[in-house]
Length: 178
Image 1 (cartoon, rainbow, N blue to C red):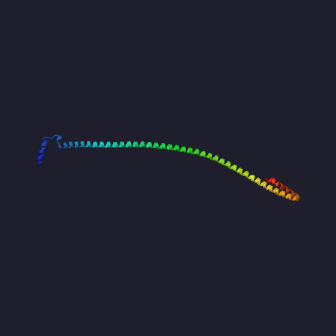
Image 2 (cartoon, rainbow, N blue to C red; image 1 turned 180 degrees about the vertical axis):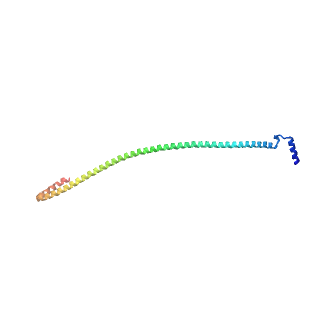
Image 3 (tube, rainbow, N blue to C red; image 1 turned 90 degrees about the horizontal axis):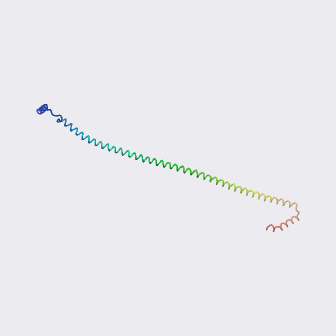
């Protein structure tokens, strides 16, 4: 091997090889070609990955925009429902106030009527009580007058006058009974 290496070295010294014929140059070219194809493939893969990522991001943005629109529509719907509920509550409250005022006025009228009826009943009871009292006083006065008359008659009349009065009263009895 020594002889051959010496011969190759001598030949190389006599005839220098062109740079492109050297093994290092060929390895460098092969490496560049390899890196070119690997880089091209890597760039394609990177481009596809970036395109996929861009598509996913675009889809997410579209989804977020759609969700934002839905949220806005839902918010508007709830605000509308809240407004409607507030208007309905105000209407119910107003109606309840009117009804309460009407019931209060009706109750006031009914109370006044009841008071008038009770007052009339009380006046009627008072009138009845007055009449009963007057009748009782008259009855008592008649009894007192009869007793007084009886005493007076018993003291002042003679037996003959008494008999005449009794006969007179018996005679008038049929007239008074009919």
